[in-house]
Amino acid sequence: MSKVLMMGNEAFAEAAIRAGCNCYFGYPITPQNEVPEYMSHELHKAGGSFIQAESELAAVNMAYGAAAAGGRVFISTSSPGFALMQEGLGFICSCEVPIVAMNVSRGGPGVGGIQPGQADYFQVTRGGYNGDVKIPVFAPANIQESVDLIYEAFDIAEKYRNPVVIFADGMLGQMMEPVEFPPAKPIKGSDEISKDVPWAITGTDHHEGRNVVFSLRLQPDVLENHVLHMFEKYAEAEKELVRYKNINVEDAEIVFVAFGTMARICVEACELLEEKGVKAGVIRPISLWPFPNAAFDAITDKTKIVISTELSMGQMIEDVRTAVAGRWPVSLISRTGGIVPTSIEVMERALKALEEVK
Amino acid sequence: MTGHFGSGKTEFAVSLAFALAKQKGSEPGCMKESSLALVDLDIENPYFRSRERQTELNAAGIAVYSDPYDGKNASELQVISASILAPIQNEDCRVIADCGGDQAGARILNQFSRHFKNDYQLLSVVNCRRPGTDTVEKALQQIEDAQAVTGLSVTGLISNAHMIRYTTAEDVLEGWSFTKQVSERSGIPALAACAMDTAADELERRIAAGEEMLSVSEIFRIGMYMRDSYLDKKV
View (cartoon, rainbow over the protein chains, first blue to last red):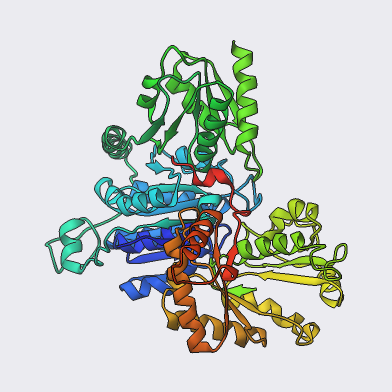
């Protein structure tokens, strides 16, 4: 199939449909409104069901129910809406039900604004749910990568029986790019569901006995064993799901660490630094959990400073410091509230930071 | 200006405003000081609206009207400023009105139509690279829908077959041929094909070499004002 010109949000929705999504639940919130809008007129054509929920709380719990019944479920929202979904996500983890959840994030805190933000880093990687829970998080930096990650996320969710989060800032949702879609997977019939997700609540036609999906475990030893079992999965995820891209890190004096839209700005800032005679590179984490610590091993003695560059007051920097483990000085370049810095601003601030450590 | 969502209306509107501003002096009497205005009626999109380039437009002598917060309204409740009527009612002012895409975005023109006094052009931007208008039938439907909600007649078609920075001369030619078909079916004239400088230069070279295609006067050099260059960096 040839490339078509799509807005990010439309492409995210189309990618989910191609991945065989058969249930989407959503509630409008800017800057992701085109996801539910697209789903409302396209998902039924592929045989799936779209429901506009009465709130994000309802949407996440509809997703919980549909996925427990073996559905391939997609939900999307933006920052404050994702905050409302936290309880549901915790329950979904506890019940070991796969869903794919998208956060097209904006400026916070509270209602915040509608311009791009990355201040949900803690929210998506640490979460606001109770208990010992991990959720794989992927942060694409362009629309094609978003499409490919969403397409794959359904299988990852199903394999780990856990939610998977796609974290894209509002700029990725609103911008347009040429994109190529992978082939459409047909929506699964009941036989395939019974085969692929035999634990799902699909009635007793296909197996003996009954399946139960539940979160309540009153006996401490039973609950501890359940959490330990979940952590065995998370240990495997930490090995299998690490994704990153290093750009000219080896001989860089300055190494930026940036994801999503910020990574694109950093790549342009590197070009501007090169013109000033300073070599710079970018570590671009694609998986935010598990965080790609291995990416930092490519940094050499030539590097003078590692700069976490974020559309937040510095959240990822905590993971960057852990990954750097004291080997290089770490500093921060940040803008927040929906402000996206120019590459010139990043270049100037990076030069200043370099000066300070020299 | 009307057109399918994502057809490139805003980029065209802003480019047209700059192009008209440049003509100041070359068409005496047409462009007095602040006699050119860009009215941003987009109440659909939160990003990539022409008011984001207000500073640059003002510097070129183009007045910009949008929301009551001087173009800085970033709320989900989108509103337009009452001052928008000022340039529209001023008969000496040339006004470019940019609105959101599709029927939903075009609807806002309806409330201003009584001020246009038939002295207007309603241009429909056609991008055959967008899935929503990739067939002649879909493009015709889009035009019909825009006319139905605005109560105005589309008077000209602007071909804008683009793939952002990756647009080739072939994309432009294919788009022009597509728009010509839409023109034949609808009876609405195809006025111009948008092309960025690289593609436009190539087309002009080929026209000079005698290749049969659109004429030089039908090429409109569109800019890339709305999209920051970092968005096209490979990551």
